[in-house]
Figure 1: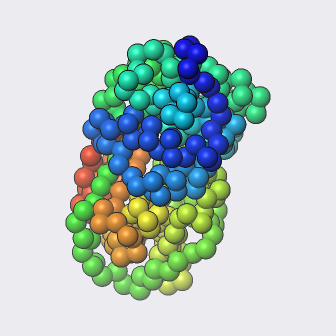
Figure 2 (figure 1 turned 180 degrees about the horizontal axis):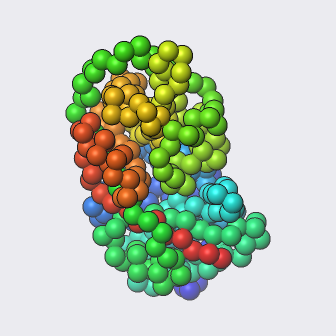
Length: 285
C-alpha cells in the first residue's frame, strides 16, 4: 500500500468525503447513485445504521478512495453483518483496495461474534460479482426491484379502513409470503422505526394487511396482505395511500425474490415495473 494511503474506521466527521466517494464510485452504474447529501446522511445513519467500528475507509489525505460499510443485526439465528456499500473511486481501481479494506475489517467483525456477511449487487455488475466471488461470497438468491410512476386507481373495497400504526405487531408476520432482505427485516427495521411509516388496513375491525415505507423517498420496505384477502385490491389501497403520503413522485419496492410469482404479478398489475435485479450473496466467516 502506498504510504499516502491510510486505513481508518468510519466516523461521523467523514460523512462528506464518504458522500463524494460514493457518488464517484457509483456514477457509472445502470442505476446511478444521485441522492442529495441529506438523503445520503439519512441512509447512512438512519436506514442502514452503520456500525463505525466495522466500517472501513481507505483515505488519501482528506479524500476517501475506497470504503466498506457494515451494519450488524440478527438475521434468522445468525449475528450478521450487512454490507451497506463497497466502492473504490475510478482512479484507484484495479489495485485490490476493496479486498484490502475488507481483509482489515474481518478480525473486527469476528471479534464482535459476527458469523456471516450479506450483501446485494446489481446482477449485471460483473466486476463487483467477480470481486465478491474472489473473496469467498456465494450466491443466495435473486431479487427483483420495482418502480411505480403511475397513480393507483381508487378501487372501492367494502368496509376497508387504513390507519397509521406506531409499532410492529408480531401477529402481522403471518401475512408475509416471503423472507425479506436484511434491510427490510423486522429486526433491522425496529432499530430505525422512526425512519418509517406503518399503515394497517382493517375490515370489520380485523387487520388484513400492512405496509411499511419511507415517506421521504417513497420506498416501500414491506407490503403484505392476509392470504384470504389477496386479489381484492387491499394491497392497491395501501400503495395508493403510500403515494398520497410520500414526498416522491416515484414509489419503489426493492428486493422481491424472483420465485415469488404471485407477488410479482400483483405488483405488475398495479403498474410497478421491474427496472433492475439484484443478487444476494453471503460470506461465512
